[in-house]
Image (tube, rainbow over all chains, first blue to last red; front, side, top):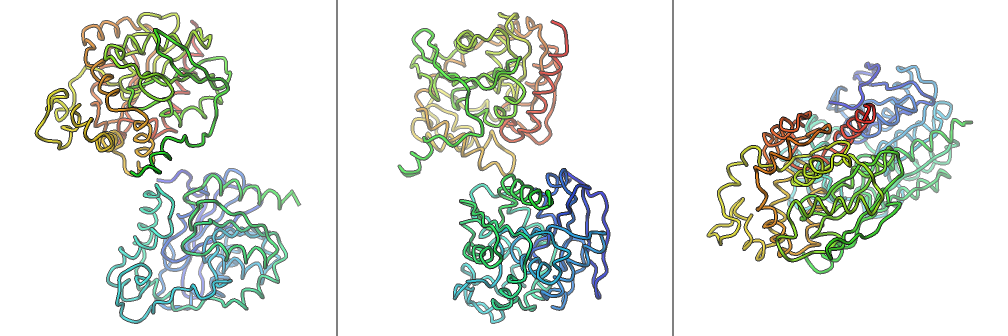
Length: 288
Length: 304
C-alpha cells in the first residue's frame, strides 16, 4: 500500500527494452527522481514522493533490471550513455521539457551525463550520496568479482559466484552496509525485498557495463552550468563522503553533509532530505 | 551495557518541541515535575502511566498536539524528575489521581481532556468520576483494567514468591527484577512493542526505565495490586463525559477485551487498531494523534 498513488503511469520503449514510469502531482517545476543501482527500483523514493508531489510534479521510473521495467541480461542497457539517454526518453515520454534531476548513489552518473549533454533539459541537479569514480583513490573494492570466492567475509561477497549462490545473503550484507544508522530494520527489509524482485543474473549483466572514469566525469562536471546540490552522509560506507565533496567542487555546487547518515539518507532521514530538495527546487524556479 | 552507554541513556535526547513552562508541585512531601506546551484554548492533559516510564513516552504526541492545544504532562511519581517515595501505598491509583489534580492546580488548568495509557486508565477514570467539572473527556490507550480477564500466560506466575523458572512471563517477578533488572525491561518492552521494526521505541522505553530502580517499581506494582475491581466498575459508571478507547488487537500486555469492556462501561467509542501492540502512541503516532485531535474537536463542537 502506498501513501500516494501515481496520477498517470506508462512505459517507454527503449531500444529493445521497456522502462516503467510514474507521474505524481502537477506543481512546478518537475522533479525527476532517477533510478539507482539495479538492486532497487523506484519505490526507494517512497518517502519523497508523497511530500514532493504536494509541491511539484514528480516523475519516477524503474531502471532496467528491476521493478516493472524489463530485465535485460546483456550489459548494453546498463551502459552509462544508455542510462543517460533513458533519462531523456522518460522526460520525452512524460511530456517534460525540463526537470530538476534528483539522484541517489550511482544514479549520479546518469544525471551528470544528462546535465552535461542536454543542459536545456536540466534545471538543476541534486546528488544524494553520489557514487562515481571521483577521488576514490585505491580504496576501490579489490576482491576479484569473477574469480571463485575464497572468503565470505565483508566485501568478498561482492562476487559473481557468491551472488549466484547466496543472493539474499548478499543483499542483507549490502544493505547492512548501506544503512549504518541504528533502527534501520524497516528500510533494510524494504531494500532486500526490492533486491529479491530481480536476479543475480540481471545484476551481473549490469556489472559488465563499465562506469565512466574520473577524467570523463570531470569533463562532464566542467560542462554543468545549472545549480547543483550534493547531499552526503558523513558515515556513508558505500560511497565515501569525499566523492560527494569532489563532485560539489567540480560542478561549483553546494555541499550538505548529513551528520551520522549512511548511504541512503532519503530513506533514513526523509524529512531532512525532503526539505533540502524542496528548498533547492524552489530556489531554482524562482523563482527564476 | 557499559558505563559510557548507561550515561548516554541518562542524558536526554534532543526534543522536537521544548516546553513553554515547567516546574515542580509538591503534594504530601512528594515533588512532581510538570511541563506545559503551547497556549491553545483547550487543554489536553497527557497523564502518567505505570512508573516504569516517565512523561517522555508522550514524545510523539506533544509536538503535534501543541500545534492545536495547550498540552500538559508530568512525570508520575517513581520516575523522571519526580520523587520516588518508598512505600507501596504511595503508588495507589488515588495518589496518581491526586497528583494529576495538583498539577492542574499548579498550572491553573480549570478543565482538560485527559489522555491515559495502560494503567493510567485507573486514575483518569477516578478523576472523571469524582471531579466531573474538571474533565471534558477521556481517551484511553490500551487500558489496563480488570473488566475482562488478563492474558492467560500472565496469570500463571506469582509476582511476590521466588520462582524456579525465569522463562517468559515468569520474569514478571520481584525477585527476578532485583537480580536481572535490565533483562526484565528488555523482555517487558519486547512484549509491549510486538510490531516489527520497534527497535527505537524499545530502546527509548528501556532507557527511561533505567532511570528508576527496581525497588521503586516493586513498590509501584504493589501499590497497584491493591486496586479493587468493584470500586473501579463503580467509577466507570459515574463517568458522564465522552470517552474514547483505543486498543490494539495484538496487545500482548492487556487484552483488547479489556478496552472493549471499558468502552462499554463508560458508554464510549472503541477504536481497534489492527496489528497494534500495547504502545500505539509510540508505534502508530500519526494514527493516534489524528484520533486524539478528532476526539477533542468533537467535544469542542458540543455545548457544555
